[in-house]
Image 1 (cartoon, rainbow, N blue to C red):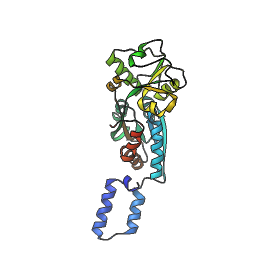
Image 2: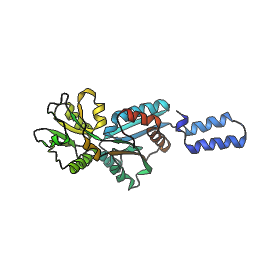
Image 3: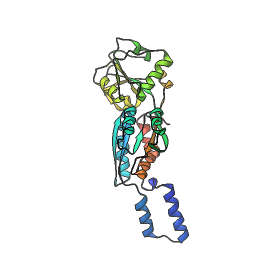
Image 4: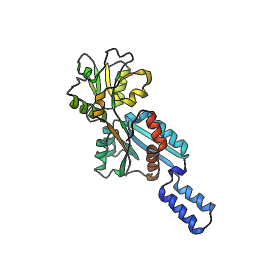
Length: 262
């Protein structure tokens, strides 16, 4: 795994040096490894829907790269953008949609070009046993069914609005939350009959909720981008984590969690 996180430039430089000398120089190799291996600590701001998956990816990354520490701040993507533009220290940003990432790329706050690493769709979550008998997206228009959704500024809320527009269905939601995890919490606690969350949230919640997939969810597929932030003091480590998320190991974890390919 350590070799996998070396940059291509560093790898090429090492090969050229060896070829020019014609012999292997153990001391030089050790020195190169010491300067190119990721080390230190980074803070990743990530969408709330990534909490379980990125927590695992952080642990796996640290295990694969001794001497590194990855800390996280999870919240609604729009809230994270507000924090970043307000000067909150962060090294990497992973958004649940491209719209909120664009808010940063139009400034000087993102370093390089964001990379799309996953997709997600909405699913209806209900308490165990589905007491309100929710079967379709259209059922959520019934005011007798207490439904919780995300606020429009949040990616899951924007997706909800897209589906409402496409179907002509208006949901008389009893509350609009700032993070998808808050919607899930109200459903799992029985405070709501139904909530619109991501399919990955339903899968990750286990038996605390029941999922009701609906075909109309395909009209609002969220694409997740990730990027290093210009303010990072550890650009190499930030890029190494991004490479891990977008690489084979990271993609395998995301697929297992129910995320789609970008």
